[in-house]
Length: 300
Ligand SMILES: [Zn+2]
Image 1 (cartoon, rainbow, N blue to C red):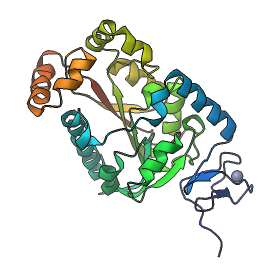
Image 2 (image 1 turned 90 degrees about the vertical axis):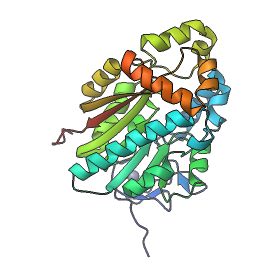
Image 3 (image 1 turned 45 degrees about the vertical axis):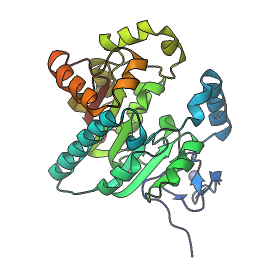
Image 4 (image 1 turned 120 degrees about the horizontal axis):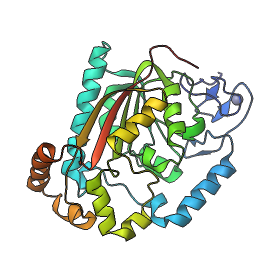
């Protein structure tokens, strides 16, 4: 019996809708892609990807392998909970507006260790999750959420135009030098009127710039290449062809990275900073969430 081609994915070589996901192979051009633990590496040039990872490993050795704690075991668990509740509320609202309880095809783009997949899964008929770090993808697979996992390059993403009705793009964009290129990929793979929920640190805000000035060693070792404010990331989304319909600030804390991690693990502290910060410094939160919509007509 012939294999099943995936309805959302495209071949990185011939761009046809002919990826046999279980065989990690393109039915149209015959290219076989490497796979690890059943997770296909859907990139045009695996060697250049490996070189990129080597370069990132040299600049920040912990980056590749460091375990991302799930919400319940993170020192920022109360903050992460606030973020999750916000995203869940946006998903419920936007899916209801489209007359749905679940997205038909939902992508967690840059899923990392897959810590968000268990709570995203109920919003998806079919959940996809991608990253360009195979170690993280294998951890994501071990969560057994039923997601279709793949390794892909965000700038040449192996999905068809309009493939997804929701893309969750959480704390990824600040790591990508060509951020507008990545956002254009998001606009391309979203269905007309489709939804992107983008999360990123608000590190361009003066409050967090102050934290960096107080700790230049943190600034020197971060793997972030962009330090956005709400305005700068919103303008990049707009430049990529996405319509920004909502900007949310979440999470306030002291402008001191070490102290922040020590005291915000207490719910009362996180709640107090949230209550005061939201009123006195509404644009100095630690996290930003932007909700974007793809144009109703595709322009590709
Ligand atoms: Zn092909």
